Image 1 (cartoon, helix red, strand yellow):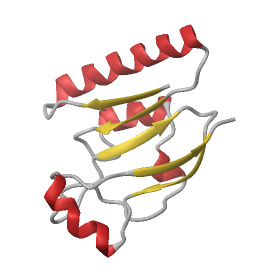
Image 2 (cartoon, helix red, strand yellow):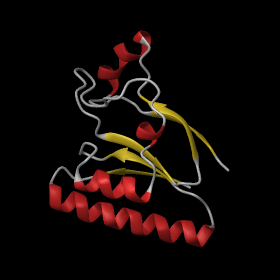
Image 3 (cartoon, rainbow, N blue to C red):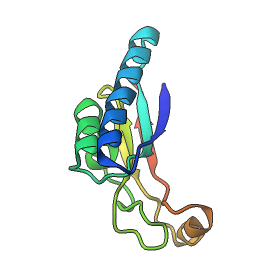
Image 4 (cartoon, rainbow, N blue to C red):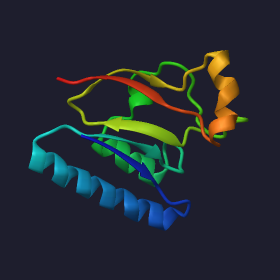
Length: 124
């Protein structure tokens, strides 16, 4: 199962929503007997409370197998990693990161204020 989220800019709601997302995904995973991959704009860097909670429940794909560039925000002047891919522990992370090809990076600022994150995953 795949899911995407865009967490709040404010700390307290972001942490509350993180718990709600995890609970919903755990319930869906049990119900369907399927592993989960969560992606999204966490609006927080690794080490923050919401990111830490996600990384305790799922794998932080970039931390497991960095491939490409790390920073996802801003598209024009990246200095933070606030977007991530979080697969269940049973899913192998082959590589994860922001594609750094110059032909692609020129288009990032035309599409959004974030850079894309690509993850190569292998199901068991």
